[in-house]
Length: 125
Image (cartoon, rainbow, N blue to C red; front, side, top):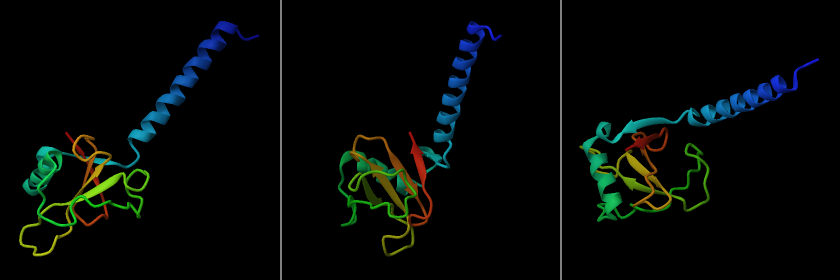
């Protein structure tokens, strides 16, 4: 016969282990990070402008980013906004962007792409 106290402790341990494993999986779902100091200077300047509310150099800065490829966490349409990061020696907008989540000025949720949405790294402040 199993001791009821042992059984309860075992169940609590199992539940905590499952909870920890689930949390770990969510944190390590493939999202890589980049520190602000590691961003190119142009991206650092763009991030500063986003937090100030502008002014922005490109007309399309601040438009809704659709996340059609689902490379960022799924959110309702209108949640993400995109901003151009100037690319040296490129006359067009270039491939670099910062994507913000929620309120661009205050959310603290920013993603950097240097390959026009093929991959993203979350900016860690």
